[in-house]
Image 1 (cartoon, rainbow, N blue to C red):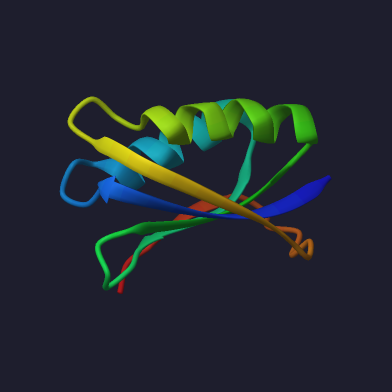
Image 2 (image 1 turned 60 degrees about the horizontal axis):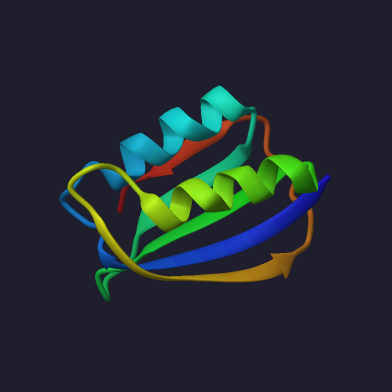
Length: 90
């Protein structure tokens, strides 16, 4: 298992990015969280095998139909052993 922190910028809020990310994560078996940040970006914490995370990152670079992803920054993090994938609303 591996933990990564992902920051996605572009037109990624107001386009169902969080809901789509959760749906894809649930389908793939990726655990973690997704939330909108005040600067207009989306922040994801994801845990899975390296192979699954690579596939998940591919999706993050595309995003849902109405989104326009400009950049995806990835950092390794410490495992938090998430039990599922949740949308954090603030």
